[in-house]
Image 1: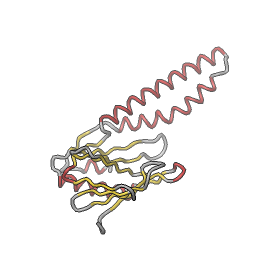
Image 2: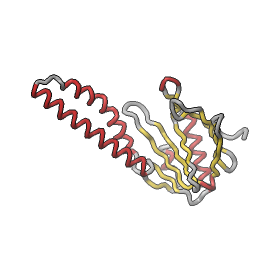
Image 3: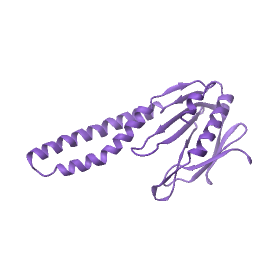
Length: 194
């Protein structure tokens, strides 16, 4: 597979660096322990979306699923030691554009979506509703504590301060995440995302 275009990233703090290569007929990956591949012609769905953080840039993700149920996620950010991440968008974007182009040429019936898969979208909405409910409840408790002079309002305000960035990140992802089908023959719209 020498000469093939490749892209590498670490998906989590405890993950291993996985290298993806575009072969003639398939996407190949290897992390030093495990390897695998998905033939372009066997791809059933492609989802391209962004997960947002409250501050800074989000992570672009391309999820590929084969007809047999195999799944592969490519992410624009790579984790480094101590929980830091490195933005690899400059290498990620051209790799994913080429990958999606090869898939759409080899699998004309592929379904390509911009936005979160349905399950992930609804999980984001439920999580947002739960965090927003907790913020509202803590705000009500802070007002009650302040009016009664019990002195516990500061604890509620601290919890609100901790929960608010999570709510912002969930809201950004949910608002951007509504799924929309793309035409495999005209992916110019997807290239704005990837």
